[in-house]
Length: 215
Image (cartoon, rainbow, N blue to C red; front, side, top):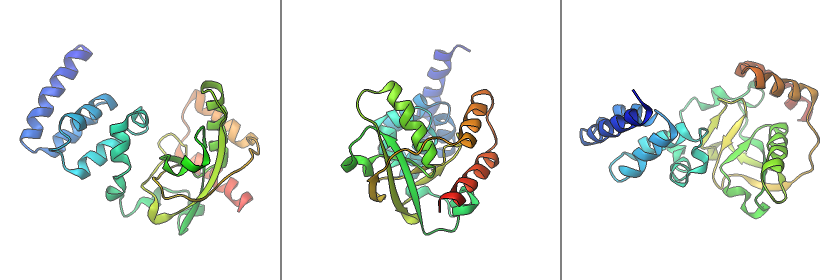
């Protein structure tokens, strides 16, 4: 089946699932890709349960969804679906902390940084993003550090081994810091990731080594 035919069929099935209030089927259809997830939220925004819209948005957030204002809107509300055991996904060295030091590399001014959704537990990951943004985005890039209470974390996403903390206006004591440079350990893992994706445990081991050397 051609892609456009497949999308048309999913749109029709999605409409039928919404009318039947078959939310599991809606969730399944919306997970097809980011464009389909956005379509389902936009078309049926007033009919879908809030928890479902948040789940769809968070599922696609790392897959082009961070560029979509509708996806971002419901990611900001997705703390309501954070699982009780969300800490189990964190690196072991910080799993029981009441607050986390987080970092961000981006182009926004410091007074707007708290509104940025994507932060990371890894200073080196934030520096890597800052350097990548310098190659693709005009203007000055910044490296920020802040502290976020655990209860303000919307979600922890590590599918791409980026130690991503999703938040909205929860990070405090934001300051701009100077880059320290990327360690050989980090650069080796990033180079390997370009060829094949390492398991999360390999990256978690790296983070625990980095964390023990900094805190």
